[in-house]
Length: 253
Image 1 (tube, rainbow, N blue to C red):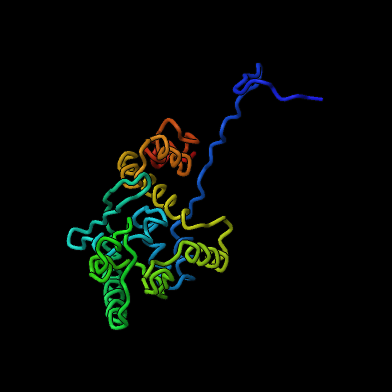
Image 2 (cartoon, rainbow, N blue to C red):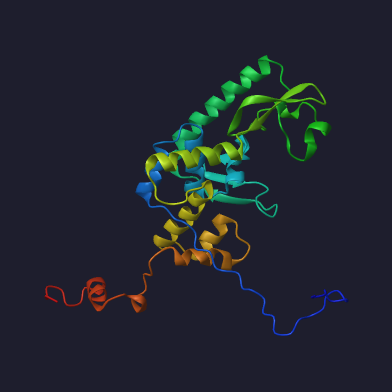
């Protein structure tokens, strides 16, 4: 019978640590993204547009609040992202009308909530205990508020939370299935696609790293495996190389 080693931390000779397999992210084409969006209803369609348009994680998109948006400068500030880090990313100008429309819906919902004397939007870091009425101020509403109020049984008060991650996950899966996308599509797929499409458009890899909020450039480098190489030395065929450089124009192969 085999026995466990008596001493902890014992080293075994000849045992090689398994290497972690590199995972290549799933990436969608722009046409596939449009097909998925066609099967999404508000506000999940706008959530996905935030993921693809700004490269956000789904948690970052759902935790956005009204002051995160600077529409005049077309800048979005992400607070307390992964690693508790803040960063700013450009806002797609094509989405500014949709964002303003969402502001109006949030403001209308807030007026209804105030009329019902609700406690406010849930605040970070237990701020509602220190500032009990702060959640009712218009600097705190979620950009994607939940459709229903949440009762906190300990206090008997109703608070407003944001749309749940699980709701977005389910909506994206249903939309991808309805669109007939033959890939495993999750909300994070749109963040992968954001990075891949920027890289394909020859955006600098360090710029993509900053927009994604990666601490290590090696994490961002994985997206070099999701787009075709554009360097001459990696051309797959001399015919392609001639077509790129314009040499041999007018000649038949």
